[in-house]
Image (cartoon, rainbow, N blue to C red; front, side):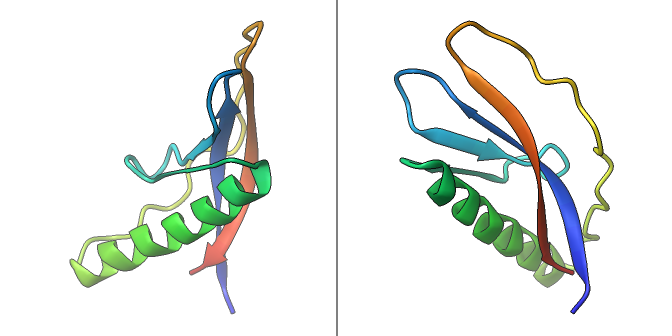
Length: 87
């Protein structure tokens, strides 16, 4: 099965759950109480987002973000990961 790899921003500040978003898919976001939950949910959100685009006859954006420089804030965790989904 062919896959597409999207860059995912993962962050958490001291008073919230984990959050995940996909820069190449505006509006595609997920949250979770644990990092594993947030990553699992963003994988599902990406698949759902792509299916919706296909059903609407819209093109699936190719991943354009490959590298980033994470921002450093004193109390916030902010990093990036690659998530592979079925093409």
